[in-house]
Image (cartoon, rainbow, N blue to C red; front, side):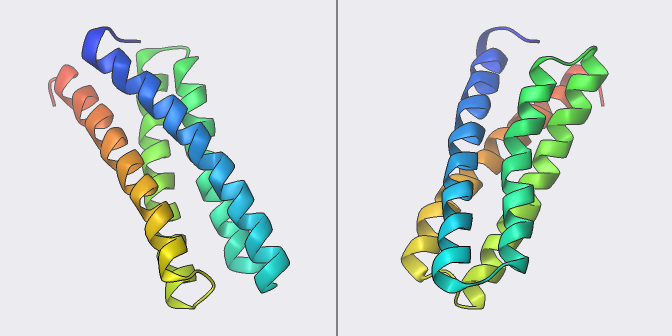
Length: 126
């Protein structure tokens, strides 16, 4: 659904969001096994894996508006994921090192999604 620079961003976000989902699944397994926390970690699992699912769905969108909608949903899920990560850190389910490691990834994903959604707005003349 794009060319040149935009297409490169799409490929980057697809790869990064998938790799991030793998990290989230592994983090979920760690938190539930080692920390015995099941509620917050389930929220993190849902939102953290949803980012990549929505990006993937956007790639196969039936229309430009379908693509746009899925990318905006992915951005909302990324913001929610950042919230759950912060909460897990502040409630001491994640160490500072664990949090800092994954925070870098979510910040990068949010920045990419913001860039893509900003490009969408600009191409729509809004």
